[in-house]
Amino acid sequence: MIISHRHKYLFVELPRTGSSAIGKELILNYDAERILRNHATYTDFLAQASKDESGYFVFSSIRNPMDKILSLYFKYKYDHRKYDDPAIYRRGSILIAKLMMSQYRFVKESDASFPEFFKRFYHLPYDDWSSLDHNRMDFIIRFERLSEDFEAVLHRIGLTPVRSLPITNKTANRSKDFWSYYDADIRDRAAWIFGPYFRRWGYEFPEDWSVRGSLSSELTFRFINVFRKLYWRYLR
Image 1 (cartoon, helix red, strand yellow):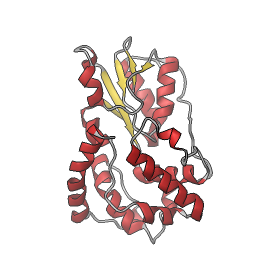
Image 2 (tube, helix red, strand yellow):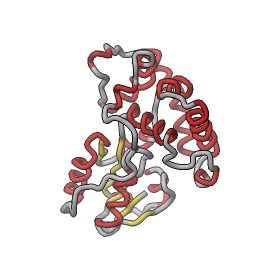
Image 3 (cartoon, helix red, strand yellow):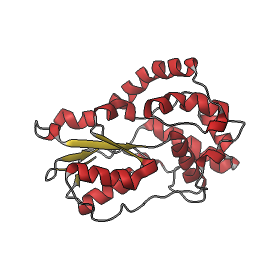
């Protein structure tokens, strides 16, 4: 979580949405500093904020989850980090650590393709921490237009951009078109899994997918999110 008391803004980081690049740039060029833990929530901040701080301009970011999951797969495949090393999870959830180590080992040991990885680990409608607090924020940066939205945020705060946002932590060894990795064998599952999230954030599937809304997906999403939010808020 990144804050500037001079300019009265707060940036809430959401993993794999360009938050590393944004956070570094804010600290380097826009009078910000890091507070709380790395992926603290806006609610965590408000619980300890002063009255003045609770009125700061607050923003975060999101990313098309189909792109995000593909990026994670390639990070496993090409050892972006040592995901089988428990030390990298020492500040995070044990459950998430075990899941990520399991995913990493599956990809590395079986040389799994992306469709194989997707079918093995993704079965429920997708969501992320954006469900907790994003609807209360002043601006949401879209990863798909990261630089443009970052500049828009700076202007909203009253700052002049120092430079274009540097791109960090870029995933290697993949094509630009993430849609192409979702072949015909997994498209129906992808539509069911990502449909509710897409509807909430205005993402769209390619026209040739002929996707229709699924009531079962929406109902399942709403049901499991009751428990997800409790976990994200209190247990992770």
